[in-house]
Image (cartoon, rainbow, N blue to C red):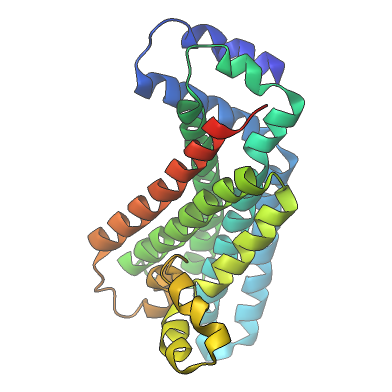
Length: 267
């Protein structure tokens, strides 16, 4: 880790542009993740699961391609999510506990710039791992006679947006609670609830008063069902631009809260 900081420490000296500093931090974070055991395991496990989906597809007879599509995209999401959530929960806390964060903050880098760089590097790492699994998935689909459909790309984008949003929330939770386990558990709960927001908003007005706070909370929880595009592959007529804006604004809001909390944090 220390050698990694020395590699880019010189680049952070002086009054370099904000974008350059964030980019250097993001690049270093990605290099660190390349050597992470969990990052490697998530890719290997994702590849194994895709192979299992191939076996399941063989059992589905006439629906083999549909099974391959659904299982493949579903496991790509789970593996990308696991890597991103674990990384978001541990990235900053690990460096605070080991005191290596001081090696960065002694440079002309603000805490907000540091946080932005770490998050962008993490999300680039998640994107690379998901792309590797997607390439293998596509190879299996083409081998089985599937023809390219742009809906696959849109479904992949929707998956990545869900990973992006959940990672941003997890990063804030890790700083707020100072606990990796707590942050990951709450993130998993929010990820689950985010897929059932339409049902929650319909049911809570007629539910018991004890459940009414859940109605208000439903407007804070990310609406991940919007990005569950693999359930609508046959009808790819979606407002992608609007949903891109939703993912960006929601993630940015939680990152700003995380930055505010990090500035208040004493270490």
